[in-house]
Image (cartoon, rainbow, N blue to C red; front, side, top):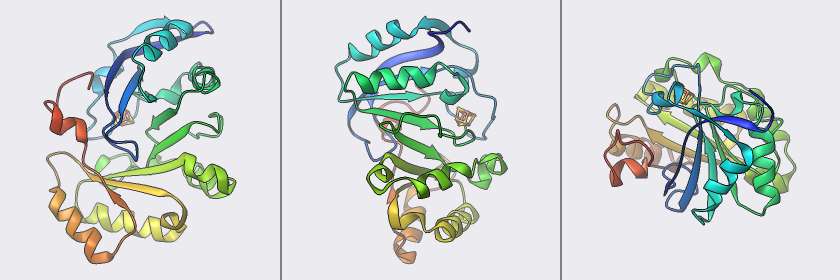
Length: 223
Ligand code: SF4
């Protein structure tokens, strides 16, 4: 890939569906490619369906939606080196920039102004052994003023996933300093079950539903 270009799956305008920004109109830049194969992946099409675009063109298309935030997502966006200057340029232009990453690669090189939404994959995903623990360390070592730029997302498919997540949160005391978004694998765990567990354990996490899947058909692209 030549410098200044990125392999893009789609650029679209939607409602942010799964983070502390859920509910906001948002411009999404979905980068193509991911090799992790999580069970339940709902963006597998981002693997192959793509086009090469110049960074300036990508920014122009995303900014045209005039949304209050711009999210860089995937696939796995951190696989492409051009994503780092893309996010920096968007920050320099004064935009609120979100990054949604699968959590397998370190976010060390990401501009500190970017709000990082980092997955911690649970056992039901089939890939939890690939979680990059450096991201938890980076969050814990961040200056207090930068800690709000880190947020972790856990999508659970069973009670044993929940127990695993709870023990990881306690081990690193993550709920003391960070927003933890906890949700269900669509169709595998009932939201009311997870809600009951969170309340019964008095767990300091934010439960979330994938908002966009309730507004539009769950398998619809570009939402
Ligand atoms: S990291 Fe994200 S895009 Fe990649 S396989 Fe997993 S869920 Fe799908």
